[in-house]
Length: 308
Image 1 (cartoon, rainbow, N blue to C red):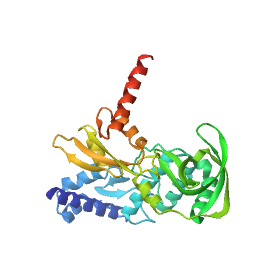
Image 2 (cartoon, helix red, strand yellow):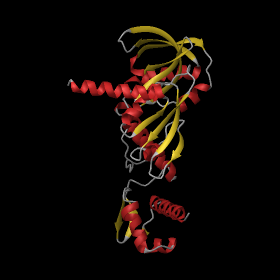
Image 3 (cartoon, rainbow, N blue to C red):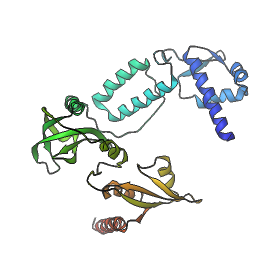
Image 4 (cartoon, rainbow, N blue to C red):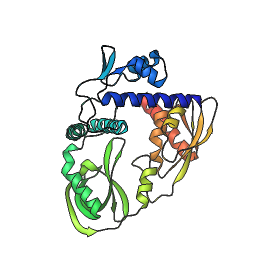
């Protein structure tokens, strides 16, 4: 518990220091050391290492916040951090969407500096703002929409659907909707000629749970979830512990860093790309038929690579 206590003390101290700087105070290392009952060296380390990403500088042995970077409209550091993260997420989307979002967030934050960096590969849909607004209205009003859809075979057809959710999986945007009471996922950029109808519909509350527990766009609503057991060696187990998959449950956690865990899915393609990504560090324990699919894919790959 001593490590947690020390960690909490550091976070508390840094938050107070940043609050003072944001309020325009000039801070002395010696005064802060006395206030927090720590050494001058500890406070100096706070400024030189722990707060190095913030726009602060030292002048006449006093630490200050750079002009133009003080938080004026949002006094909460927690709120400021949330806005920084949102800003970086929209940057990953790019295009006009990020430009508009960044301007709006800058007005809220009243500053341009962001110490957070993220690398998100999300496709730009800023050219579809009008369509998205129309879909959002239809979802809120629970009204059916008519549209044209260009399917994967590049054949355009007309359809009437019940829009449920706009979702993003692995950087791509989809519209989850019901077509003749069958749950389908439509690639958002392939939808055109949208028109809201006057026909209303009722929604199923189970959809939110289904989305929360889905791993990828391959999830199904007409299939009973089944369990897949996986074994991760110590090269990848730590990543599944840091960011667990939806419905992930650890069965055994071994001293050598390996672990066995299960996930519930509704379609084998929810888990198959993840298994392939982590080869040769992730193994299927059961069911056998998914293990066989992985083996067949590997054998096919090895055969094809010989001909290249």
